[in-house]
Length: 226
Image (cartoon, rainbow, N blue to C red; front, side, top):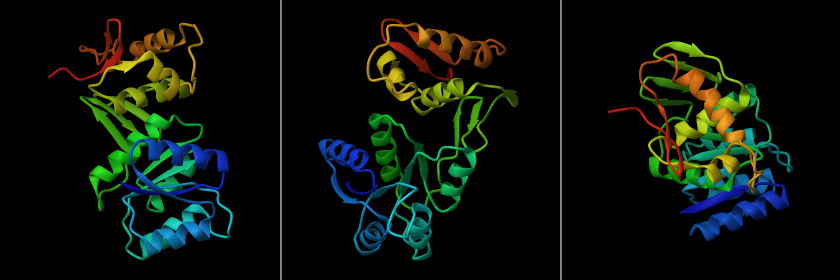
């Protein structure tokens, strides 16, 4: 794929560009909004990774709104330190297809960008996840199962979101440490076990069939029984 990264932080931009190129993609980097808009409007890309706060007089929202006004439907993933609900809503309403907050795990960024490109143009942003009767609204940060609201703490929500985005796949402890806690080392604690146990109490225990399964000697899997 051909990907445009618009990011003014040299460390973050270099890290993302290096990782995408190592994954086999052709990558262009713009370090301000004006250069990003010029490249996005004048060349063809399969996806754009776009920061919200940019120098050059054009921020990420304005850049994307300009592209959409020109009927440019390239899939766009916002990558931003602005992670509040209102921030995500503004990004998606401006025409973004997905929103990932900093700090982030590169493996998740890569998976999201590749998923956006596979879906192709013209599809709406990812705002809801569903596995069986479990539903998650990413904008309102709400979770329901069989229509019943489930109250989660922020870390529990992030853990469940990660499991739902990888539904049907084995999720290892290493993946969870990096994707949910942003640890790139093993802290040698039972923090994952504690949070998974708490999540099961809320997501599984009140209902007849479990969704969160332990995969012996591997990790966990979220799946709905067929």
